[in-house]
Length: 143
Image (tube, rainbow, N blue to C red):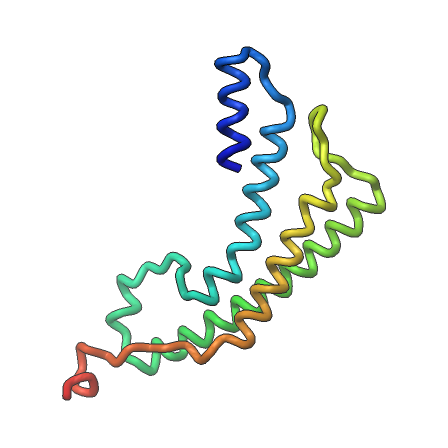
């Protein structure tokens, strides 16, 4: 995407020949990257986390919260898969295209949503049990 956008800037401002396909390709590519990165980030535990309250909870509550997060991730993954498949199927049946002169089938744009959702659900199902550090604010974390 970086090369495509750099080409567009060069074509538009240096060659004075703007392209019509870069915006469609870059915006739909960003959607695909986002949906396909979700399962990868979940598997690596690299998603954004705000731990202002979480770190001060007792270990048992943090373990429960970690399992609840896993249940939500699996559920969200399956819902995203179902919605993505439904969107691909209905867009294909209706022959929907993205707007603009360089248009793509909407089913192509929606396919990464279904794939990313399924991968998220599978990763959340087979990932190891959530690791929860010992509570350092209580005596159980002290040696």
